[in-house]
Image 1 (tube, rainbow, N blue to C red):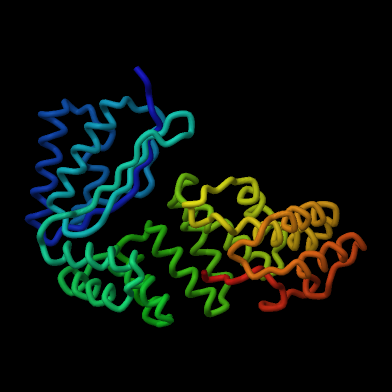
Image 2: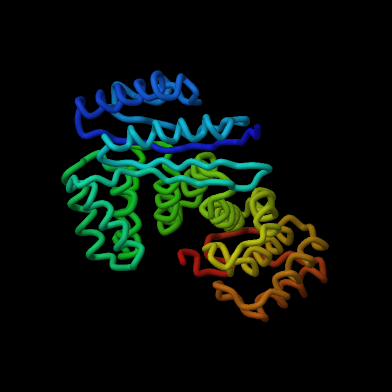
Length: 333
């Protein structure tokens, strides 16, 4: 019988004490009677009595049977039926490859649920104003709706309402401190504020609460490396950018199209670190890539290759000031 590596993370919010207690009772009943305790999550480890919620920070099980996986997911789906907000992601992996992925989120007829789902769909369509109205309604119905705050935060960010976006991301993080999306969003607001140190802290939390099978993981490493580069922390930038440079992204991945920028910034980090040989290699790699989502020019790359071949460090790398190092923006695309 094959065993699988299982990763779960998420949170369910309940509207009141009664809903929470019913979810807890149903979970225990299914675990005890239906599944004979053949699950890998015990209720006492995931049900938060004080907060009336189910909290599962990133949880990893190295060896689980398919039966135990199915039992646990089924029990969590039952719990979700009583929730008013939240979501849970679950991955089943074999030899590092995703065999099955499940996203569990409330889908009932309560207005808070339907307003959130509508807002989520509208965000995906780019209809930001209508999305914001729907998410406003979801939050009015459930003030602890971390996912609605997080989605509204991105809407406000796209509408350039940065103060409101920061408020929303902060509210989301208060309810769910383990949300990688909310920390990622708040990091972008910090970048707008040119507070790269705080952005890096949020990116660190994003990485801690995401996995390499998620696009957000690699996007975070790429932009975190860029923040280190801007601050003149070249060795840290290299540590983040090298794994991204080696990754092959499929066209449907939102990291696709940024590889020229990654190699360009890696070359700059090596140049700032006075490793001219590696700088030349990285910059030549950048030069070989076709046009991507960045705004780099051939002259940008050739100019740095010339400096690296002459073993010269341009002044902007000796005393880095935010804005002096061209990183191949648009930063916030």
